[in-house]
Structure formats: C-alpha cells, structure tokens
Length: 158
Image (cartoon, rainbow, N blue to C red; front, side):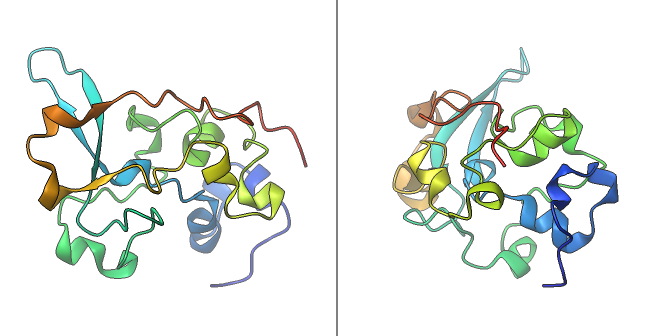
C-alpha cells in the first residue's frame, strides 16, 4: 500500500488516492451480503447471507484482489457510484464522507482499533450464513438498523 496522507479521511472523496480510498473501508462486510429487491416497488431488504468469498467469522473477503473473477456481479464501489448505492448503511465510511459527515468514533482510522466495528455492532462478523448453506434469500431478511451500535454517534472524536 502506498503512503497515506495524514487525516486523509477528512478530505473530499474526489481528492483521495486509490490507497486512501481502499483504506477508508471499515471492514463491516455489509456490502458483501445478498440483498432482496422487490421488482414491483424497488424496495431493497438486507439479508444475513454472505457472498461466497466473505469469511463469515471475520467479515473479510477471502480473495479481495481477484473477487470479480469469482463473483462477476461483485460491486466495485467507486466515487462515481457511491452516492447512487442507496443500500449502504448509514455507518459506511464511503456513504458518510459522500454526505459530508465525519467517520464514527469507532472507525479504525480514528480509534486505531480494527475491532471497533465489531464492538459497535456494525460488523457482520459471526452473524451471517454462507450462501451455499442459506436456501431462499427471503428466509434470511434482517433489520440490523443503520448503526445502532453502542458507539455510533456523529463520529467527531479525533
């Protein structure tokens, strides 16, 4: 990974380098869960069914670099589409920064603790099932809220 600028996460998203963009991710794993979209309403419901590459215990992709080779419809979140991906949780660093909000105080870039996302109740680690074991997605709809963890505030801590 290249050098990361001091407090890069406070810069506009358009100013971030590729390395800084990647480092902004808190590792919650929510974007790697299957969603159910209803054709008649366009409503999207979240499930606890993990992509085949997501490790259910750590909520980390097992082959991030080559994920598109194994999962062609894997979303590659970019600056161009971040504002259009309406299902990103309110805690997502990309969504928060696109909306001009600070990172939540548990985010590892502020706290220095990669497990903060788990303690805040935002991570899917240990709360998901593998897609090959799940069955119909409609049986796995969940409502984890948008950042109802104990430390999900405006993130002003520095």
